Image (cartoon, rainbow, N blue to C red; front, side, top):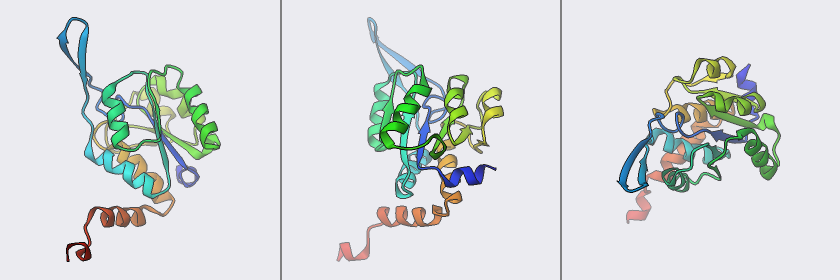
Length: 186
């Protein structure tokens, strides 16, 4: 049932904490009310954004927290839509769809907690990470093999690209982009 849904996907949206990260947030005091926020991201998920681009998928994040770390990671990964400080994720979802001129069934969403349910209920393909809350898993079309922060984003991207029969082409293009040709060294 979810493979036909995946074939229609043109946009992949994600939560951050618990999806792109393992959900841990480290706050390091620097004096007074100032603190530094630290999060860990998985390199496999980073490569997933490159594969998504090669497959023609747009990407975006919708997160309730506001973090400079997330802004920098999104910039590095060339994520097109970055919505931070958003409690009403469904409104952000609808705004992104309008910007991209897409229908809800052309968007996938990856979540882990109850704040993600409104978007998961309205998108075309809802993913829950392996360590998501049970109520979130119950409403997902697909549960990733990996936990949040441990390759779950890669699982979602590969699932979509396999259904669209473009994963092998995207992997080959990614490797080609990363491997200098012999002609460049001569």
